[in-house]
Length: 212
Image (cartoon, rainbow, N blue to C red; front, side, top):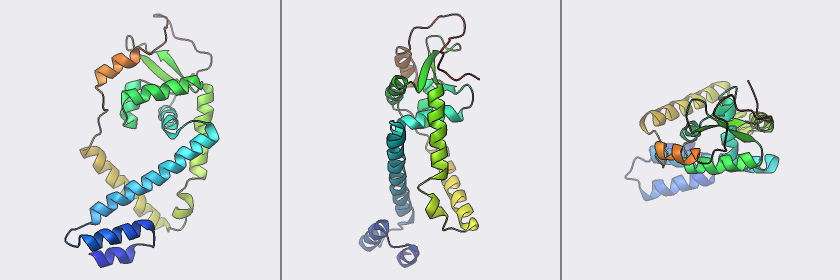
């Protein structure tokens, strides 16, 4: 097992880490352990490059950009409840509150009264927010850190790699749903308290928000 794994690995820092584990624990089947370790390392490097791009190009962190991305992919009117956001992004309601606060200050999102949930609110992209997230998507699609690496693969290898990633993700999402660290009901009450005053009747009007 160990020899075949090492033969398949190109020279890299991770290959040396794997070699160390295989040498130290020859009694264990290490494939899944090392695969998970490789995925975590790839994720950290990709996330670092992503966060750096967001900071340098748009003056926001990668975590804030993920909020904008979640709103953008939801489609018009690009608005979601805070609970939808922290569930989709697998972070706590407290983290979403801080991220939304920062994005509101930068006028990239706005808080609107939620007509379907008394005392609650929606987070909606502003026109500036829509421009930022669209530009970020363009950059990520055309200048991804993975582009030069994936270009070395044949179409069949690329398809196989994507199929593998989708298969693993589907399995993890089905068996290991990550719950927010704070209760949903408590978070709704806490976040609702941060909403600005809004008229109880009529449609809320914000000049800078993106309308359907």
